[in-house]
Length: 139
Image 1 (cartoon, rainbow, N blue to C red):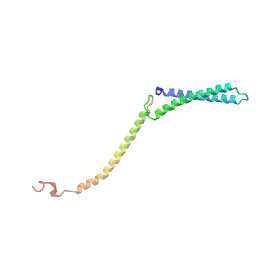
Image 2: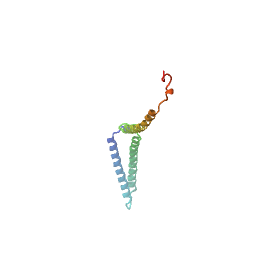
Image 3: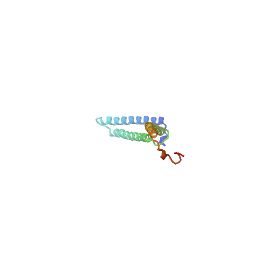
Image 4: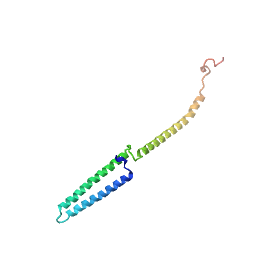
């Protein structure tokens, strides 16, 4: 499985790809150098061109593997050797906690603002003596 490769091995793979790019550039330069001659040898041009194309295909395959890995990591899919998904989940939990905390603070503030009004209304209102119920007035 490609995801079990360590970060150091990935860096070594990228270094190998970089060397292959250098080889491809070298092959293309040699092919162009041969073509620039008055009487180029087509066999030499074809050899360097074939080497360039094969190296380029290898570079493309290696880069595609690296891009596929990076795509997997950036989308948060589970894979070995990375804690990205866990870090992302933790960060989202912190954001949810902060949001809930701010909403609770807002509700406490609203409750504190409205509470004195509520207490003033209940203190100023009293039931008439007849409405208090049977047996409480004059027994």
